[in-house]
Length: 319
Image (cartoon, helix red, strand yellow):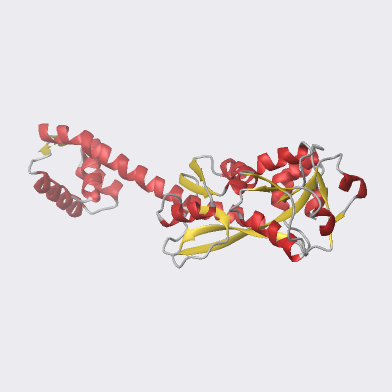
């Protein structure tokens, strides 16, 4: 049964006249009549009776009419939904994010995305980087936002560089001195979060490369806990800049430049399956997320992300 046959049936049922229906459908009368005949053969019933006043629905035609109307409405709705998907204005967006990205960078990005595409349904799942990779491979999520990872079936699309910075409590001696070197950092208790994370690996490697083989540590399992430990004078920590901006702005933490130490950062990417072409909401989200990588010289985050913190008067941290 062809969709065009259904359309012709509905036009004749509404107008009661083959000539007027053919004009409306931009068809010749023989073509429209042939389509009606094919439809009647398909359903096995006569749908119209020809009268002196035109075409009248048979009892079978009246029974068939609401189903034909629903068919056309469903097809039209389906076409509309596909158009929304192509334009990113409707559909579904399923994201996976590592805890740091999901807690600190993603909310602001989603705020802009939802404002631009309010009809898109969004779901977010969090997990460690390996978990996010598994979600992408298993198509549980369409995109995974996490550190760069290598897998033959997955492509990494760069988003931004997340710098690792040293933070202390406002009363710490480093605050008064205004800076610190790695030798002095090694004398402090260093707070580490999530011992399996690349941030912890970078911190240990940084101190080890500076010749500091042994140092006191306090280990917690998440960034927020590490920040609270620093605030309560229990040590110093190297934390992602995106995670501490608000705490620095509110005066709960102080960002300390490290003299003589290499800059530490981690690439945050969007993971996607290589065999899936981004369309609709996924493509729209990637377009918006790509603004995070539009950095200026010396900037670790783009103006788009830095704008998140403008009210905190920390814009200079990103320029």
